[in-house]
Image 1 (tube, rainbow, N blue to C red):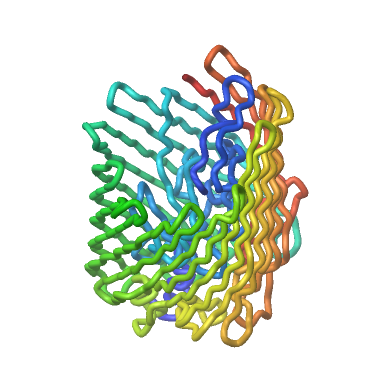
Image 2: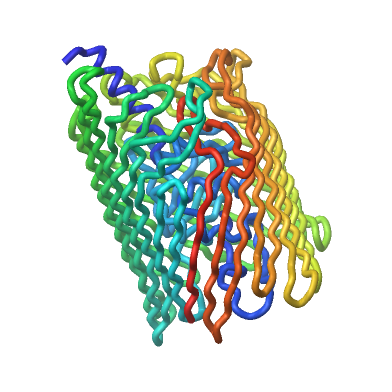
Length: 605
């Protein structure tokens, strides 16, 4: 095999693989059975109904302005960046357990069943596990027995069927989520010659299943969970790689068992993740096949309690053992030991002022750091306003691919260090007619030895000397109760940021401006949702010589709710990309023009 050809194709796979790899919301409007009830709003700004979305990544693109979703095509691999930080800097937590891949530090967002969108939570300052906060995926526990059955059909020949339920019998709670996605997803797009075309070879078959069980034993909860995901994808042509002979197969299984009470959360988990990439195109040389499998044992020990009336103590420990077998690495079999722990205390001086401080340490087979500090000052100005000043130092260790990937890994990489300071301002107010939440947060991030794949250097990975990001993020959610059966929900997110390297060049694929506007009219029998997402231009290389045009996406959905006793059937029609925008989120990855879908959902109690 020609080494250069093989290297190019492996590099292409690395590019594709690098894409793998929001506060919890109540199921209000989606599961609304009698009248319009506006429940308590939490600071998530994501309260619109995303029940009909097929892919989680596409829905998240419209929820938070500080998340920029990087789609390699609808249904293909998808990840995100946060405030100039790569996705490896965001911890993906499933029931509190970190599930980022040890191969590349990522998680493909399209592997998350979209039924869990109502429980996905993003927090910028969760447990200091990573520099970019955490994206938490948790099962939504409900205090009533119910089941939802949903089916969605896109005109692009894509289909999704879901069933999820929640049951309580005595001291036992059982819930499940199951989603089947299948089809060819042959959407219309504009090709590199500015011609309207229809994509081919974009088939997907995904089974996504989760089960949860909890039993209350005195003051303790005994809990267990299982997540199985089986996905086959045919990778479509792109402007970068036009030949349609690639496929990607994922097989993932995760299971945990644990105990929890008001102070403790203890879990032990077993996880098996495998991936297989194939390219059978003879025009680029002999067939290529890449495989890897990671088997890991992970633990979680969390404690939250009060030392006295004024001091609260929090402790987190995440031990892990990984066995990595991969044809992509220079050493085909590797064992990795890792332990991350955080400890912090919150001192409440009075009813207005609290001071927080803590330390994080992280150790693994390759790197260690025992002193990563975190500090925060919280002050309540009045009944509605609160402000916080937060600062921390955090690190991102190189992943297995960063260090050992054949031809393109860099064993001399150093951990990426991030210095971060932000000033959060939050306002909340509510009465019988209005509920308003406002958040404003200016931030500054200084990264030293930033780990970055350079698109203009054959995707080699390097430590960039220094990068700087500063900007602000603004969120507003306003619910206006117009009458007993009519409410209007408005969500506005604005994120402005400047992310530059030591040469004053903008970082690749980091937009400096993104805004989201959602308008949601909720009636006892009808619901109309309009989502708008404007994203500014993004440079595609470190020289800033190429860029992707800004785009405005508008999605529109209308729902009719038919109520039968305590049950409900929803009929929805939707239009994605209403203005027929020609856009790309990754250079060469074609995205769909205007598309239509139809959804039927039965909610049974």
